[in-house]
Length: 185
Image (cartoon, rainbow, N blue to C red; front, side):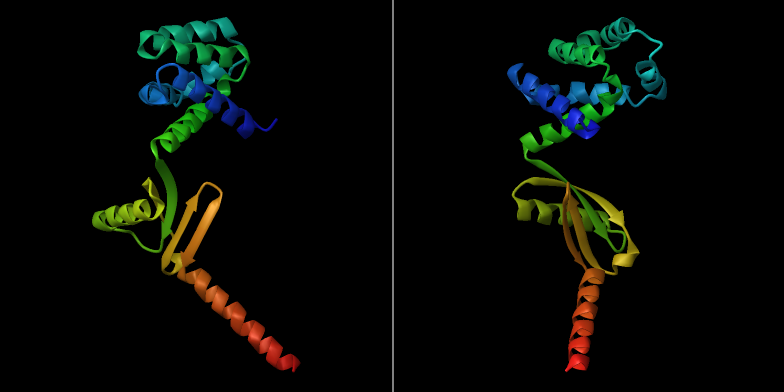
């Protein structure tokens, strides 16, 4: 099974457990705290090394997280350790946050523009995207001058390309096709 599929399965399982345990919304901050903890290089090395036993890793989780996370989350993390998948903690936590955001009606979109946007323009862009989608949109902006103008939006595997570069390329292809057809006649 592919690693991203395994991560998604674990994240979905955690989401379902959280829903049964009073609602996934209550798990947002604790999962974010676990994700933050798992960004530390020493923590990653500790959980990634096979020299440390699963029991020691589970004890470390219980000491570090103890009463600060819901018991169901702690049990979930220990099961992940039992199955030897602890190196997937950061990805599982990230996917869980994405599921939680989707549940809350929040969509994340990567938006590429040709030039830097001012704060007012960023807010207006987020508002227009939210209005168009009917959901709260959190855009992540990238600047790529080579798109010349317009906007490119990526959400997951879906790409909306409204860049001037794409439009010019399409015009060039159409003109070349017309020119080739004229030469064949």
